[in-house]
Every structure is written in C-alpha cells, then in structure tokens.
Image (cartoon, rainbow, N blue to C red; front, side):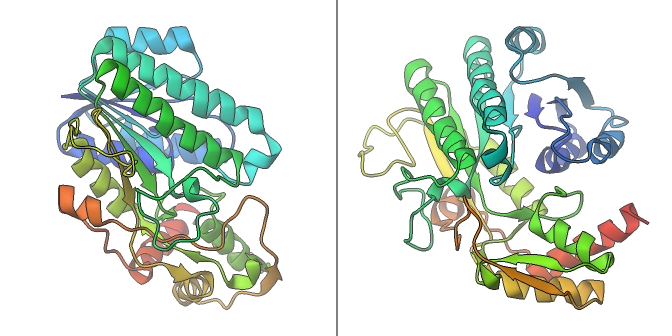
Length: 332
C-alpha cells in the first residue's frame, strides 16, 4: 500500500508518517515548509523521517495545481491522509488569504487528485473549531456547525462540505476527523502549552485568556495517530437509510468523526500540571477572551468507539510529562 500524507513535516503529519513507516507502509510525504512557525523544527522532524526506508519527501505546495496533479498521476496512491493546512485561529485574523490558498485551494487539489486517480479512501483533518457558537456539550458530529467564529473554522467547515460533494458526485470514499486540541512532543510552538513552557523557563509571565476559565478536550498526539490509523482502515460506505437530521453520515460514502479525549479540563488544571512537570510556578497574566476563541470544547466520541473500537485515554499528566521530557531534550 502507498499512502500520501500531506503536511508530513507538521506536528501530526510527522508522528503519523513515522508510525506508518514503522508498520512497513510506503509513505510519500509532502509539505511546503512555510514559515508560520520555526522551519528548523519542521526540518528536524524530517531528519527523523527521511532515513526511514519506506518514506519519501517531496517539497510541494498544495496550491500548486500542476504540481499536485502531476504528483497524483505519477504516484498512484492507494490512500490519502490530508493533514496539511494553514493552522491557527488567531493567525486567521491577521492573514486571511493564507487560509484561502492552503485550506480551500489546497483541499481542491487533493479532491481532484483523489478523484482522477481513483484513491480508495481520503481521510482529511477537520477541527473542533467548526462547532463555533454551539453551546451544547459535549459536541456531537450531528450538531449544527453553521456558526463558526473564525475564518480558520469556516475553512474547515468548507472542507467538510467540499469533501461531501465529491463523495456524492464521484463516489470518492471520504472521512473527516474533527481533532480536539492536540498536544505532545514535537508539537506546534504556537500552541498554548508550548508558549507556556517557553515563558516559564525564561522566567516570563504566561498569558492566560478568559481568566483561566477555558475548558479544552486536550488530546495526546499518540491517541490522535491511533484514531487516524483505525479510521483509515474503515472505508465509509453509502448509507441508504440516511436521514438529513444526521449530518455526520450520508447516502454518499462519507463520514465525520470527533477525535478527542472525551474528558475536558479547565485551563487552570492544565497549567498546574505543566507547573508540576517543569518544577516551576508560573506567573500568570490574566486576560479576557480573544477574538475567534470559544470558552469550551468537549468531544462526544460514541460513534468512533462504536465503529472502530477506539477511545483516546492518555491523561494530561502523562501527556504533559512526555512533552516536557521532549522539550528539555530538544532545546538542551
């Protein structure tokens, strides 16, 4: 089997590619290596992947229509796991066109490539941010997601709609995964836990938004990867009994899942756990909610458990402990 992993130099893409290669699966990884955060971190991830016998890296931008078409024509992928995107809720307030180029034009390149090369299964990354102004907890995949509060969230919602149209029109089996606050070793430096660690070790105050009253379904990277792998092996089938009140499935070969820890924690608890592993008490700068943010996220994963028999279970104590060990080693 040959799998395309987009965003292979990114946080989730790196861990997934490594796991696939260790299982003996041929992986072609692409990434444009943009400078949204430290490029050296991306290069260091690739330095671990590239010696692996079953991994090949190609530097390529999703918005390069000709390059993407050529990639699909040449490689003949069995499956595609599409993780590349312009990430970051707050950055979308500053650079909106980057989200159009990467998340919308890029998704179009993926869908067209999968369609013309008859890919067996497309799995793509969505986000818990699509739930937007939804106040019903926990979030279920049958909730309405028509009220995003950031352009990033809107672009992810658009990805789900684009994917469904291709599943319907061309019979392309497609599964979207709504990730909930992913963290762990080799993570993204723009994420709160990474910024907290940077600041605490430098003796600087940490910025705590919504006065620490945020609640998040923090999900450890190994659980995310396991969920992706299990879902990738379960190719969605058309559901002839589908009713429009259940938007996570369809009469087309299309499915949406949440992947979250199913145990949301208040930000203050997350910070105190990080303090314990760093051995440092943080100086906290309490701030109001930021534009584009939501006060809480929580994942209902009943359908994930039912369909693939998996439930994320890594505690934040274990997960943050692993992150701190990696951080100290990497930045030593």
